[in-house]
Each structure stands twice: as C-alpha cells, then as structure tokens.
Amino acid sequence: MTMQGHALDLARDKIRGTGARMTAPRVQVLAAMLGTQRVLSHRDIEDMLGAARLDRVTLYRVLDWLVEQGLAHRIAGRDRVWRFSATGEAHETHGHFQCNRCGKILCLDELSAHSVPLRLPAGCRPERTELTVTGLCAECTV
Image (cartoon, rainbow, N blue to C red; front, side, top):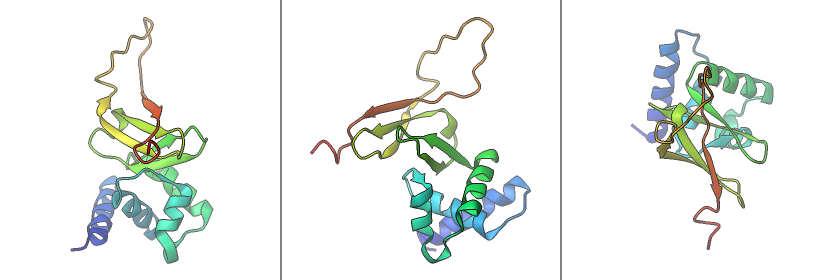
C-alpha cells in the first residue's frame, strides 16, 4: 500500500470513529494532514489537494469540524495564519517551534505541558496549554 493510500485509510478510520458522516472533503483534508509531518496552512492544504481542491468555505468548515472532533490541532502562527496538523496521542500537550524568518512551524514532541512547571493562581484550572518556542530553523541559520 502506498503512503497516500495508508493516509486515506487512516483518515477514513478516524472519521468513522467519530460516528459522524464520512464525506469526501473530510477524508481528503485529514489524509493530507496525516500524510505529512509538517503543520499546514489553508493554502498548503489547497496546494496538496491539487485537482481535488475544495472551495474555501468547505475547506474552512472541514478544518473547524476536524478540530472540534479532536482529529486536528489548530496552531496560531506569529503571522496570524492558522496552521493545522492531525492529532496524535498527546498532540494537545506538546510544544511547537516557529521560525522567525520563514514562518515554518515544527512540532516539539519532547517539550510538553507536563514537562514545564505551571503554577496557576489559587482556584484556576487549566483547560489548554500552548507552548511555542521562536527562533531560526536549521534552514534559515545557514
């Protein structure tokens, strides 16, 4: 089975697991995210879909649905562009690195909300933690 075929099968399984209706746009977008290690902007996803490109409203709705279902993670870039990635086991708790020059965002699996001491004021309860380290990526430091 090809990598693309594996991503499509995995996307179908994950969507089926939500109990919601499986649609071609949901499968295409989730498979695109599962088929890469990168964090993707709307434009990146449009480019990856190529001939199967969706209209923008459908793409936005699918991405929102995937995030609501816990199948995708939304990351706010410093450039105010949302980027998305498929969720893994502990995706909600790991950190990210964003390059100040090219804007690339990378997942930092070894940096998690659990590994950083967090002291909140009395009575406060965290629901979500976002950790982003900024700097220059390997390609921009040369």
